[in-house]
Amino acid sequence: MREAVVHIHPAGPLLALVGNPNCGKTALFNRLTGSRQKVANYAGVTVERKEGRLKTAAGKLLRVLDLPGTYSLYPRSPDERVTVDVLAGRAQGEKRPDLIVCVLDATNLRRNLRLFLSVQRQGLPCVVALNMADLAQRRGIEIDTAKLSGLLGVPVIRTVATDGHGLDDLRAVLDQPELWKTASAVPEGEDNARIGHILKELGLDALQGELPSDKVDRIVLHPVFGPILLAVLLFFLFQAVFAWAEAPMGWIEAATAWLGEQAGALLPEGHLRSLVVDGLIAGVGGVLVFLPQILILFFFILILEESGYLPRAAFLLDRLMGSVGLSGRSFIPLLSSFACAIPGIMATRSIANPRDRLVTILIAPLMTCSARLPVYALLIGAFIPQRELWGGIELQGLVLFVLYFAGIIAAMAVAWVLKRFTDAGRQVRPLMMELPSYHWPHARNVAIGLWQRAEIFIKRVGGIILALTLLLWVLSTFPGAPEGATGPAIEYSFAGYLGRGLATIFEPIGFNWQISLALVPGMAAREIAVSALGTVYALSATGDDATAQALTPLISSTWGLPTAFSLLAWFIFAPQCISTLAAVKRETGGYKIPAVMLAYLFGLAYLASWLTFHISRWWLA
View 1 (cartoon, one colour):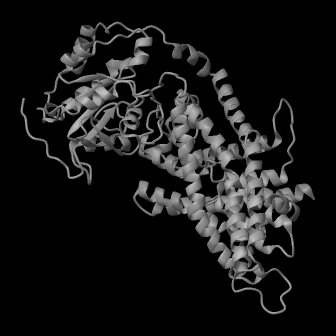
View 2: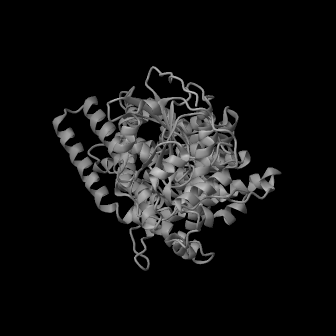
View 3: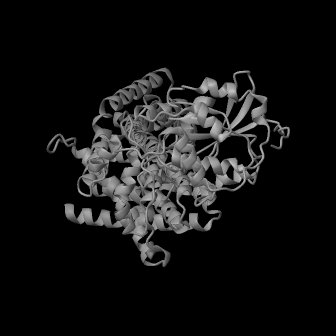
């Protein structure tokens, strides 16, 4: 065996985690590094290299890369190509790893060994983390780690990443100097024969019987009961968003109103009081109140991810998505887009077919992201009565479900049009996707995911939303009303002139100048439209108008129902925020696709709003 001293990177030796999707690799990365990266158990979630720091038992500091899950070193998608390029030393701005931790799923050793043998042929020193050992033991699979180590020629450490078992042993092994010596590349051979020999030596060559997950799948994947179950789950999710969030939203509203009163009582009349009460509290508080609904939505998505249900949903929807020229593999990026279009667009890297990937990117913004939820909740709360229909079903939750469903239908319609007018769209692409075993969601992973989402949302409220709210207050306050003015000062401000100018464009779809003005900062982040409306209407108040601090009763009394429906239709298709367009540019490598996306979304939004406004006005006449 050829040996050589490892070249140390200035930032420390580089260790890379490699493994199949669903092997627990990212959970192991989180445990080793203390990272708060979200863990999911479906293929394709790790679409970028994630880096952390690991301190060994002896105190040595290592850089750790969590590479995208892959089944082989023959890449079929962009995320698999990342792994191959890093292992080969071709990744831009990154050196070749000094050591590989190959994470193997103990419940499916036959498949996982194929990747290990491919990695071993790269000539990189390896150590094996035999993960999910507890699950394998419950299934009656006993693996002699010492014997497996002798058969593979590398150290093998038994681990359970979800509870941290075996991590101390792994850290101790990483301190062994001989482990970091460069190994000679293993020659090409017959992998099937070698894997068969290893399994026979371990007594694992017999086929397993039916697993509990197989019994559950008889119902979950049933051609009739499966889609019904999926529809019921999604419907329950949207009902819960309104029903469960009602109490905490009331607490936040009360706290915001109290804070506004206290600030108003302490500050003297003037610009400073207006800035704090009408700008900061009315604007930021109007967005923060929707945090409970966003967290409830994410709670259910995380539960579905953790349980292993999401790949089943992709399988169930494969036939439907095939009818519009896509495959079920597009489902996971599209579902991610319900949280935010940016991670959904990034998750398309797991789609091997370039045409499918591009179409998925184009329709991902039509999924109703969480930034739309504050707008939907504001309008539904103002114009849809809180009424129970039948069987405990809330009317407001039903309307929210319809809005989400409308976005899905719109996305499928766009994909169908692209299928009809492109030759590649007519090709049949069968779905091949691993269905991981079901398991109970880990409370730690769900809590981390919720904390991350709350942190992101609060940072947006305290960052870009706060900055734009203050900018809007400045534009709405100055230069001030002239001598003898009879209307509110905002009508004579820069924002007032801008809003009335935009109103000439948006008046045909029922938008007044306040709505037109709020759409401008909404291009930076969708939820800013709510804080913008709160700021504009607070500054539009005359005298002691208390309703200016409560946006819902104000718009319900000043807007017509056709205007509210038109604004809902606008936000189903509304042109994306700047961050999403930047993500599309990065993923597609140019400005052409972002420009196409912006143009077609703006056109659809205006057309849908125009039709909704005029049809509803005719219907209600």
